[in-house]
Image 1 (cartoon, rainbow, N blue to C red):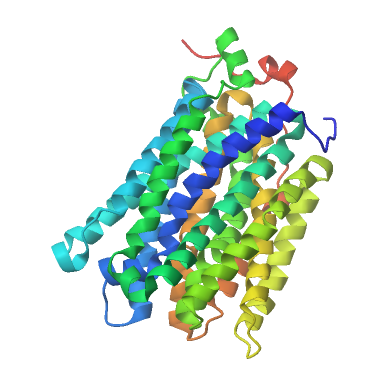
Image 2: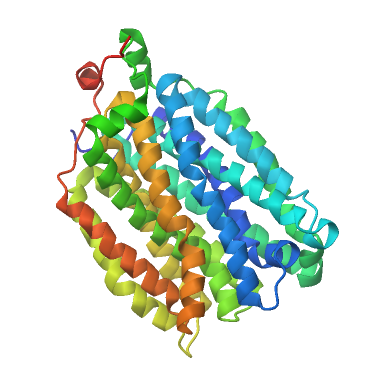
Length: 436
């Protein structure tokens, strides 16, 4: 494959359009974690803050755990009906459920019905996100096959901006409304904003054209009838390799990107507003590192890059959290460290999984590995980290968790990675004929 560091302007425009939708959808999904303390009080009241937060993050994990089901469902649709139609549908579902969360009654108003409704909304959020990001990864990778790392890096740079947008909204509302108003009804506003932005993304998605790789399969009528069965029979090595890579990605991004605002403000007692502002600024400034990391996958051996990231997580996570717990506290430096981990992991690992699968099962393969890795090791990260804090009596719980997953990620290096070249002339050679 030619090694390129530039792309035609049309591909950049396409990447930015796709990435805007992904950014807004990730904002919708992650705003739950940013509002965790308010949701804990309104939907899961308990005798102490840690227990209430623990239950809230358990509901957060439910949203992650529903992602694999969404990935399998929308992956099947994407490989059978097309990339464009499928991930246009996902963002519509996300916008609706996000807006609904902002309209739910609280526990104090309707009792146990409130947390049940919240959990149902989280399930549908996770279900839709399970098809959204894998669809965006697949679509961009197939739209710019010689620059897939660069294009997918742009996508995850936008996702970093989505995290920044969420924390910016959180900080702005905290400053303008105050803690009492936020606890009463102000927490609803970010969900309403997310619903409106999701509808905007839907309008953008409708203008896309279908992937040329998928259209080529359509012309020769060689789509796989049941993509998941083909994956399980013929691509088990790709599934295992992708799962391990996404486990490392999911745990790193969630611990350092999603969990940290709640960790710093609730467990370490730092000011919520200050944490939110520094998080927003740090993630916005460091977002280009996702693009650079994606570009590296076009230029440098993928296994070498994955090994460097896994080792960095294993050996640097514990010292990083020791610094967070020290007496010389600088929130800005903390969030720079967290932003670097999240940006590099999110830009580096997802482009690696797209070449693990051929075109006719690529959407399903990417969706399966991405979502199972994120669901099991990313979705459970806030809950597991908080539980480790409670069980061990030390705030080092998140460091122990992410370091352990880093060791697991190293296992992927001992597997012979499948490599399906992203070139249009190889489409027909890589397909499995549809069975009548």
